Image (cartoon, rainbow, N blue to C red):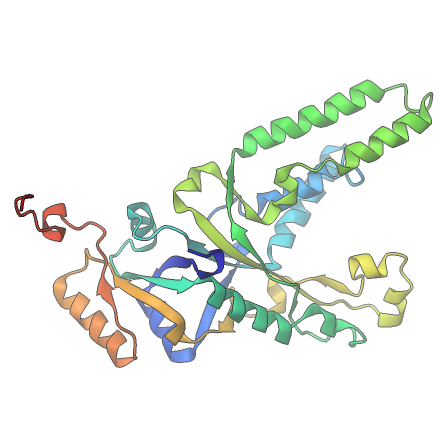
Length: 311
């Protein structure tokens, strides 16, 4: 199956699906609201690994952690899975048996998100008034999550820094040209944990086989635009913008236009009592969506015709 035509799966609350169908919108959740307290830790590692901003005191480390926690508020994420009918996922996201699993082609989700970004692109902040209040977005990033051991990442990073600075302690001024050359190379040697920051997840979650869509939100800061343009790194760092914070929007979600007709399939939790399954299926049918009962938790002998295997 072609990469863009793969179907991605997500287990959501039944009422969220009804809302999606009724309103024609898809929900992206703010990262600060995720249950995983280490969500987006890869973004923190990216800051920590940069030798230009590398802190050396406990106080500076605390500031970096505080900055990371605030930075999470600017991220909105939609999490999907490449696995259909994962028992672990049903257990986690349908604890009361009322969840439903939807399947949607990846390219259709990408199309919806890219349209949203086009309508709310960060470039619209150019020449805008200070603190105009609009929530704008950088281009969407999407891909497979990479499951890692965070403790090992930190250990490897420490070893990398200690090795470099121990080799050059007391020598940097004596061999300045050589030091500058090696320091530049050292600065450019970013590990996978830094390059793929938004897509790192604790290895404990690897059963999810997550495929995620990431939106980073910004808003116009309170500085005059012409003053921002005078900054030496204005073009590189968008110094007229700042990351969005929870106080900039209401609720923990944003909603993107999405046509429910583009949902490939819907499955009802098979653990639900039969009469409730029938009610859910009828409600969805009345809304124009056909649903089936998931095969997860099903009995093997009920799924197969075990007639004698002979002519």
